[in-house]
Figure 1 (cartoon, rainbow, N blue to C red):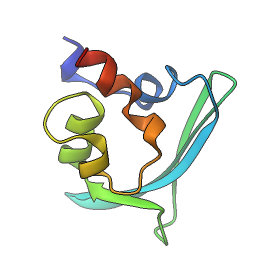
Figure 2 (cartoon, rainbow, N blue to C red; figure 1 turned 120 degrees about the vertical axis):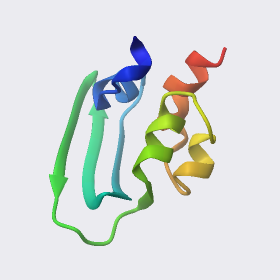
Figure 3 (cartoon, rainbow, N blue to C red; figure 1 turned 45 degrees about the horizontal axis):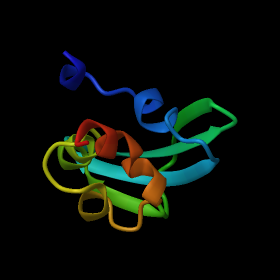
Figure 4 (cartoon, one colour; figure 1 turned 180 degrees about the vertical axis):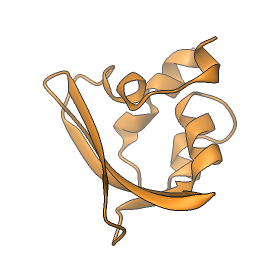
Length: 92
């Protein structure tokens, strides 16, 4: 059942260090989200569309973050390496 829903907390909480990024996801509509994890507290918020550090197609990015399909680095070029932690765990 884990693959039917992926929450930003699931991607960010396995991190043992701070990470922050602004991600623009396209698909049906386009959304820009600022995600961060610091001291085990995961946060995300939609922000006005603008210059995002990372961008990708939503379904492809979500599958990559969950360990399916493309690698995180391919689905979200420029994404912090740490965002691949959950995918690596599912594929180990």
